[in-house]
Length: 86
Length: 139
Image 1 (cartoon, chains in turn green, red):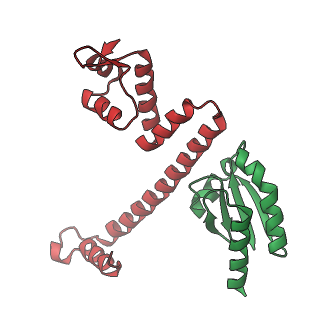
Image 2: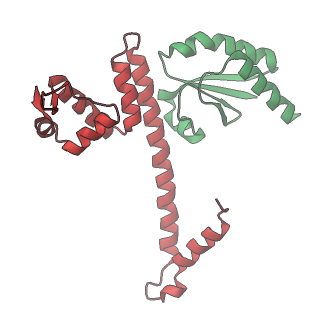
């Protein structure tokens, strides 16, 4: 599973939550790919995916969170996706 | 202090628009005269220029209201404003892509309709648009 977190430098909410969300993803899904993407360096990629608000979290190419999720929300989304794949 | 007409003259915004901004809680008069006329000050002029510049960057009035609120919030920082600017850029990029797709679709229709002298009933563009309409799910 591939997770892309689109953020802007200086986003205090992103800094606060980032490590917790990353740890949650790594615990919930074995071998998860996590990419931090500075939207200013990747405007085309963001537009391709339909990212319109920041921060946004894209899972396997689909915009799943258009604002910062809680740890519980991310865990739930990841587990549901993993079940859907099985 | 000056009247709405003078503010309109200074900013290039009509009296009606200034009253609309007031109704939309974007810019209210600094005071009212004893006769009940709206009175404005230099800060009003700055605020109207701010609104005009933000509109020219694509911000909606609702978004400008948020920017103005941020401007007056002590705890807000430039990063908050910057994030809104980046989000606006993303929205504009998304619209540009959608419009380019429309333009390409029109190119295709224009190319398909090579015979300009054909009667309108046999027009390829009309036929293609009707087909597209049939394949669009009912709202």
